View: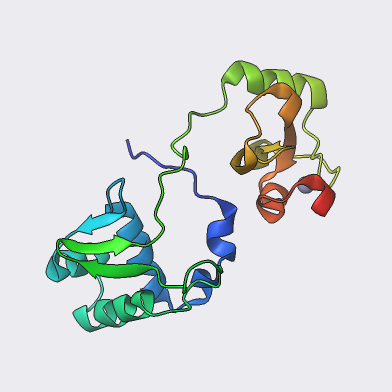
Length: 169
Ligand SMILES: [Zn+2]
């Protein structure tokens, strides 16, 4: 069985996501390969093999990622990676508590018993396969997985909302 991890919606709304596809693929591959300190302990040829693109594309992407202004984040000069002795380091990498457990089924059941299959963001009915539980206080801002902080939402409404608190909508 494959194991999948949640990826914050902000990931596809970052300036990185306007980069060419090869750059994005190298970036995602490096995020998958790095250790808890953000070190991608790899040779260039191993990285090329992992990415699955021509070597020249990977080298171009690495140059982009190592150049300023890939991120438009402020605080840093925008570089994403730097070469280190063992391979590369992802600058600013930090392990978030993102490998979080699924919302317990009892909590989920309590939310659905209270609110039904109605999207709290757009107020329309939700089809079975389209249900997300949205955090009123975003999980990334410390909102807990408790019934009082969870509401049913369409997957698309939940993703559109991203990490914004409700009052910013
Ligand atoms: Zn909705």
